[in-house]
Length: 261
Image (cartoon, rainbow, N blue to C red; front, side):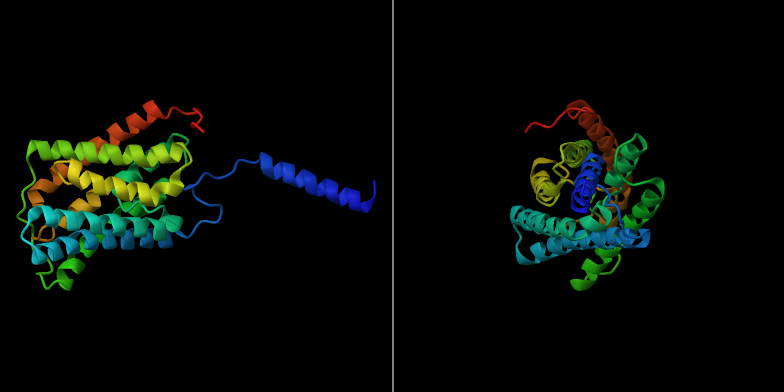
């Protein structure tokens, strides 16, 4: 065997070994991950920006029109576009959760052998998301000359609204983890934003589906606010929805089942 043939043989062997090694799925943590502080910062900024979009567009809408339907349309469209941009921008850093329900669901699946955040990352993400949600509401109030912190008086404790939160959150979890199971997380920016936009209209609660956003929206007495007394009920239903969503993922996307081509 000549030197050239030996070199080609070595290259072929190395290529075969590389091909045999498991490759990361789209959305999985890359081999060289950003430091935890960068991930937590991305979650904080993403949650803050998301709540600022929701609250700010709600304030703007109520100043421009008295038609509640148009107000909700403006609020939902701004949220769709803002969320899509934030997921695209920050997804490569932290996974773009911006949502404790998603973080806890991913931590749970990682404990059971799937890809996802570990306990240390989850412990950093959740406080960052909550702090970001509160900061985003205060920022939106500041931009529109509203009191920086004024507890919302918008009661959302009715049973049908709580049911809406279960449905909204279960659908969100099913979507995200269904995309992960079928190697389609590259579509998450469009898919997740589109789902939230639709859920604004088909759920009675207008789809908070996010404990950090729920807490943040209690700090503003504007269109998007939620009374502090309604917060724990919403969060409880969101956690129930998370469990329901994971159960649906396990039922529909059974481990080892091949995605349809």
